[in-house]
Length: 420
Ligand code: GLU
Image (cartoon, rainbow, N blue to C red; front, side):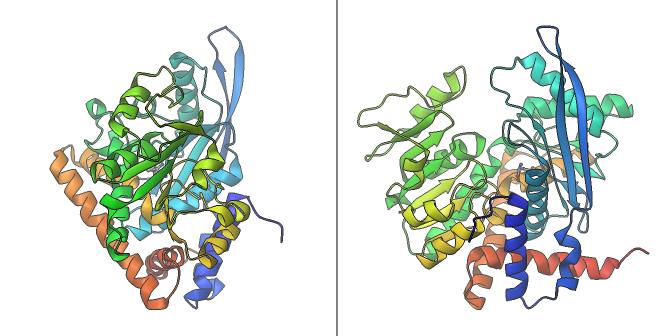
């Protein structure tokens, strides 16, 4: 069978499979197979050398059944409509799994930001925001960070939107810097959520995190923070990778030293990091290395059918969105490897975005203890709901997560009914 790597097709296969297990009729969830609204924009940007380049961007609102659309914006050369659609849908299910009052959305600009100046990145961010400004809003659709987008960029989105609207609107976007209406703890929240879920799962599996080995694919915001929290809990981080390649160390990487190295690196990459016993490896080497937990914190379609056959980890922790293909998932399941699904595992980010939005709407700000204790409460509750559903129905956690989400989405849809 030809392997599907169109992420939207992958999402539909997951959704249909979960619906079948739950005994749902297609009519019950047909609206969730289609995004509600899709927007493509082309906008000109003046580059530093004086030339004008036209960039293409997208914003997809998959669902507003349970609340305003919500989801990040990514800057990446592979961004296209199909990817944005899939990522928007996963946001809908993710917000329903953790039971926060949002639908799902996603956006992106097709661009490789490496080598662009801060000024160019600012103008691309503002150009894109101006073109989607009518589409978004604190009560309509709230963007946030995602792959290659930063808190500073969210500050520019807030400024562009507020200027165009003529109203100070911090609630239009989340993951802003704290100085501009952001929430404390938001930057670390996805990685911390990954940690909470891994901790809970390890307990259920009778695995001692402090005696476990971990490999982390991706050392951006999610991967580096997940590695930090897991390291602090005593886990041995034997491998990490990023766009520049991978590092492997049987005795465990010194994560605080690596974090400091990356922080000082002009391109914020792991390349060139030195530590005794560290060997370099590649992406495939990271995905297939011997470890207890493999944390995926990069992009979609990493664990394909072929790669899944070689995975040596006992548990795959999906910090990224859609890192395992439908076919890859089947192989992991056959081989008894547990996949802790993205729509649960990486929901800490959007959960803290929800806290940020609540703080913005109330103009009342929380301290870090309030943020992190609420994050832990929500993540642990969602984990237990998914885990118990999986146990009860004897199904993989991914299917259980979809079923938890589908129940909430379908209940809300039934009450709202169909307009016209
Ligand atoms: N981009 C993150 C995600 O995929 C965060 C989204 C948000 O905070 O809205 O979950």
